[in-house]
Length: 187
Image 1 (cartoon, helix red, strand yellow):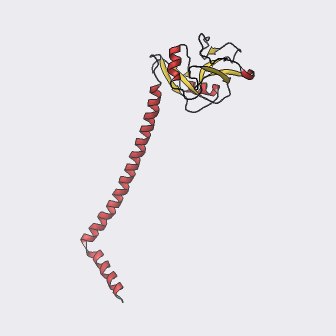
Image 2: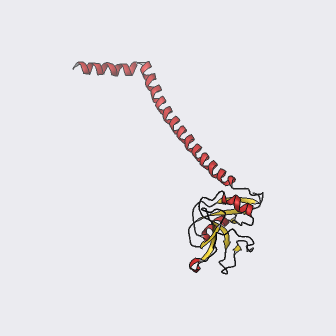
Image 3: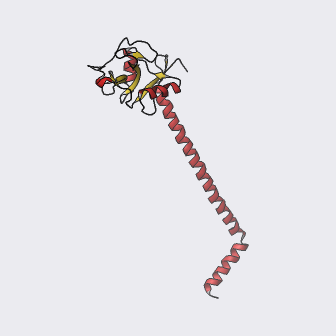
């Protein structure tokens, strides 16, 4: 038996009989458990806070373009789709593609567009006869010079152009874009 073995025996005896060491080990184990618990709580709280912040950002973005003259709520689609799918997206959310019937509303909406976005205007039923999604006729348009031009004979849906945000352009309804939805009446 060497010195190292004797030292180990003394440590084993002290660990077995010393209440201070036992309490210290228990406390140390509880501290580690407590640290793990705190870590889990902190992680959970952090994730919850991130979710709240993201939800807050989405709601803020919704509210930012939401109320237009107390007539309804406006919101942007969450992902680009063709005109029909964007319209369905709007309807699935209790809305429809936006109808722009005044220069003031056009200016208001164009301040939010950073890319060309679908609006609720098309001549899908009859070429050259532009109608809004509620079947009302187009009375005033905000067209880019030379538009609508029905290029290649299949441009039947309208976007608000981001490069020239106060102007519209007709495109193929199968193009992929975001859209602006409008829910009439206050929520």
